[in-house]
Length: 430
Image 1 (spheres, rainbow, N blue to C red):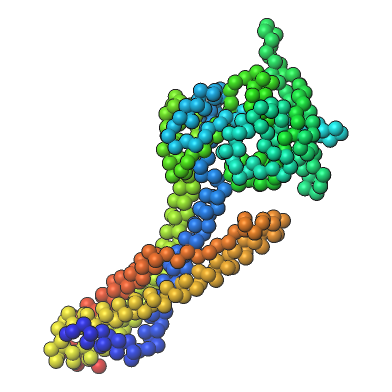
Image 2 (image 1 turned 60 degrees about the horizontal axis):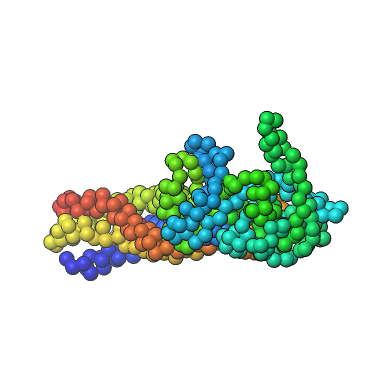
């Protein structure tokens, strides 16, 4: 029998039992809707997280730390030779050291502020690493020949949220008080408090925490000046900027090769993002596996309904076989019914799943914003969490094909049962 005739007979059988067929198809629709909505919602959430992390983690920047998480962080720092070796690696745009001075106290006339993070940097190189965060509220970047300048972060310069007057402005002369280690053999080492005068080159704008550090709470002094004050040539960190973030892992491996095993730790944002992306993908697959259970339940319903249909159509099957229909033709008719149910339910489920994903996304985005408001946190519009479903063609095809396969598998038993009926016994069936 021709395929067109088989499909016509299957469709006619489904049309004669519209209510039962609709309920059977509804089970498939619910299953596909759940899969598509969770898949597109999960993909949208994954892309939103990835985009935020790519924007915030400054993928072109690597941070080199002395020591290892396995062997313990080292107290020994880096020297200029280490920085130069890293700069010579192919793909490195610039490498610059950073000396951690510790917490200091700043005095400007009658005003006093405490900076918990004071660092010494080469301003010319450092601004190449963080051009988007070294933006000045007042003043400008110090020139290389000025060793008596200081740059103040926004939160240090504005200690309280409601304070309108800044602690200092450009060209102010301020006093920096810090503790300097004194080594005077044969006496034991001791810390001495020293005062140094700096001219404010500029104050930074408020930038928040786009990466792993927040410059709002930092103050910066020239690297060469700090080396003279603290009598050391060592730096505690090396910041590295690469031309292409896709090569950051390769460059990190080469940097590790410059040092003895387990002597440095390199923070590579791209590696962290890949790990988070992998975790979110696994969670997405897990959610769809749960949603697939509803489709399996629908498959059991298909098997039950079609088994009852075989019993009701026993005489019809007997007549078909009596006039010459082969067993494989009867099998094909019932499998075609199951396939049509899968195709119809799959198509409807794709569209309803797409619509449901937008409804869920709107509700979840509103819920997140409500929770932020209740917690007293009002992020700017650019930082608000907005989940937009991502309609993936791959997941759509997989879900649609899965629906058809489930329907065929669960429709196979009643179809085989119908094909094996004896025509004589079928004609006698009441």
